[in-house]
Image 1: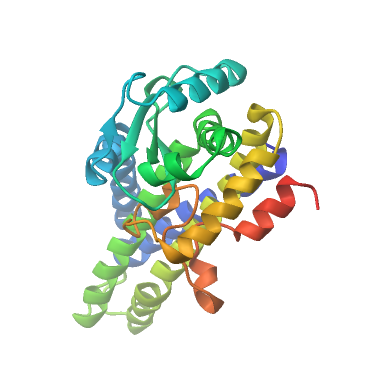
Image 2: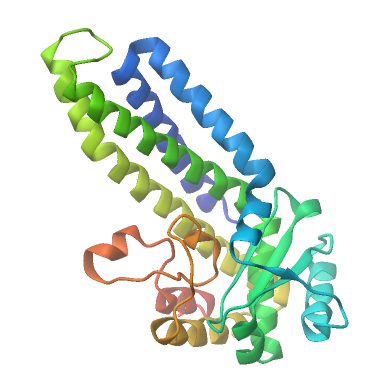
Length: 280
């Protein structure tokens, strides 16, 4: 992961933290700010320890053995040896759409999940590229970063909802000051949008870094580049069944849209990712 990516991610997480502090300040002054920080901390703790189990259960992911998925095991074992990582638990999602994600609070407790469609569609080199990308997320600690971004953004949205009701009933951190009511309304409308945009930017930054790291783990960028091309084509015809809250975890965005919606995409365009991988 490059220094630029580290700096960009740190800056974006700092902006999210600043946003939640502003929300807390508008709602309840210094006390509100401390409560907002506490809320973010509690949500991050829960996300860090339990999000992997929740997500795997949500998608009915089934753990597989070496006998059930020999190709997946062989490719993953080869890659973790190159990357210097512990062997993750391997899962298969019962979905025809090709996709994959990694989860777990650290490399020792990581899991990699692939859809049945991915295992059927990809040749060995492409599957190696996809699994290398997911292992890159584990190596770069992206799971922790994305969990923090998602939970802080969720806390901001929750506070914005509280601000909307506070403005309606004239409750605010500075008593009956009309300016504060306008501040609460401003926060209620714009804070969730700002939090979502920042969260998406964090996710896109991590995807570029995971592509680059994954190519190094695999030994070349060609398998991943070819896989991304296939995944992009299939995503338009056979979309992955996923929730907006977890869409950022997959290697290819399950939810897509053009125009203004691209601003809220959790992933960069596949064409741009392929271009960067191949140095074009």
